[in-house]
Image: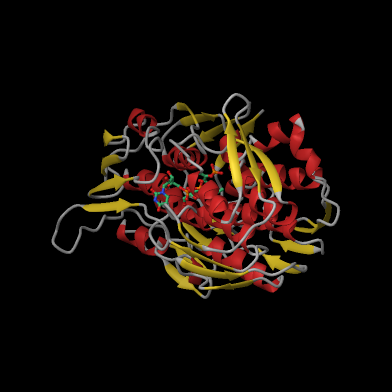
Length: 435
Ligand SMILES: CC(=O)N[C@H]1[C@@H](OP(=O)(O)OP(=O)(O)OC[C@H]2O[C@@H](n3ccc(=O)[nH]c3=O)[C@H](O)[C@@H]2O)O[C@H](CO)[C@@H](O)[C@@H]1O
Ligand SMILES: C=C(OP(=O)(O)O)C(=O)O
């Protein structure tokens, strides 16, 4: 397993272009199974999870053509769902979270599906109730084979209905939308997730002939259609990468310009980093972060200690909480980090504490960070990346630290960040990948 070896303490400088969004890619790629006509996707990131899903779609019988380094054409005119009964499918689908979103399109088009428990980060319970309760409301029957860890779903006739989701699940909403676009009649989904990637999915489906309204809100109305056509779609820049680069610039006191950010789709993300005291300028669609010696955490208006917590969109995404936490370790002031949505995402603070950060882990969901205000540099250590975002948070910590750090288990990072070592090297980072 590969390791990153990092000599920290160097200021970085330059421009960086965010990759296409991982979590949008997983929704959009799954949606290509909804039509027999060609669908071309641009700005596809070359990362492990996305490549695994493309492979699975090809295994299912879709024609996959690579048109350029970041563009693919998919034609799902010859899908063979018998592949779902194979061990190869079970093994491959269990390796990533995004594979769960193959279900909606397969049920919509072929009426039945089988699915192993999907993979993804081990960051606490990751239930799938929203997905299955939604399919059930549309008329599907499912059972979970607890011996084989397989879900079997029969959806010979999907019928539109009103449903109130039990939570605003991102992949759950995507799955139900993809099942409902080809269902008979009208589906109304209340308490739908509405983050930009879902908006992108709905816009793409409408270009294919679907009839979805309420896009961007938590109340979606979908009039079922008999079939969908082809389209072209370009993925948004990855907002989690953008947030990670803002944090990287602040921690390493670097001057960095993040290019082509689609700032209009970033929601509250820039504002949260500004509350940490990070200066940034919007230059057209680029975000410029000047080199800053120090940054000071804001307090709330009444002077009380700042809390940064996650919430379903348009709240702050849970995928950037680990980055905010690491940035706070060198700020002036204190902040309470509250990771509400996942139970096991904050345990990586042990490693930051070993590096010299001042953090009290109050419970699995809350950590109080007392910023060092640059009075003391973090020091390099050997550590392992527990999940994708903690992995990048530790990478940022290592790049700011004195001495050398080693991060193992970097497959976790590779599953979501394209060629990250080379891109950081181009900014001047001293980072080496050791196979
Ligand atoms: C492949 C993919 O796209 N993964 C993303 C997707 O995962 P995923 O779709 O699996 O996450 P969900 O939105 O279903 O749920 C995330 C967590 O938040 C909890 N929850 C969710 C909604 C809600 O209203 N209340 C609540 O407490 C869930 O119980 C769960 O613990 O969305 C998550 C939440 O943005 C992100 O962290 C993941 O990176
Ligand atoms: C948790 C994440 O991914 P996944 O849902 O694929 O595990 C993430 O992207 O931060």
